[in-house]
Image (cartoon, rainbow, N blue to C red; front, side):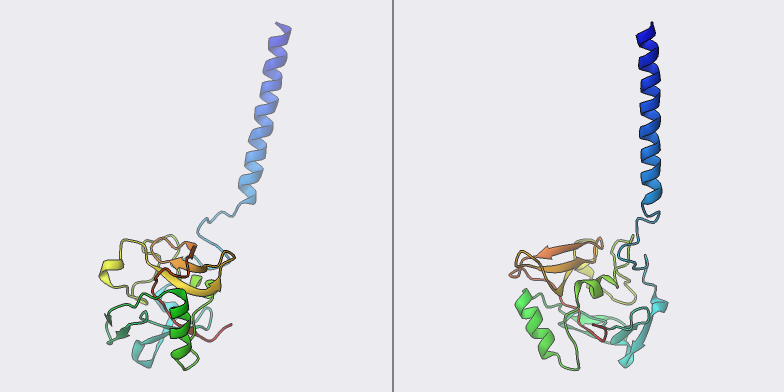
Length: 180
């Protein structure tokens, strides 16, 4: 009987200690799982100022100016028209350098600032329309940030996650200017 009593007391103390540890851990974690790198969880349309008849959007939170449409498309005043170019990383860097007017491929941090967290697709479709076939499946865009393994960082605007693309894979490009 004595050993059962000790077992129950020890078990109760152990369960209490574990519960307190999990409670302390939960308090230490961010309460909003949708906030990463200090980026607000949404990118409302009010955060963007249209320039050049709406073909360029200035993100007021960062001061960055974004081409509204991916390379290969043009803004017609209401939508992006044309065919999105999907380029390998070297082609994306070359196309950005050839664009002029200080346009460049964004860093991974810059590209992530226009992710609409906790939404699918993970981009403000009013600000940055995607061609209809891309909505509902992965749409990753190149960044200028190289990965440690010889690849480069991409942002998926389907789920809002960051990953690495192989330099020979083909992804769309959205150019930015200002900032870094």
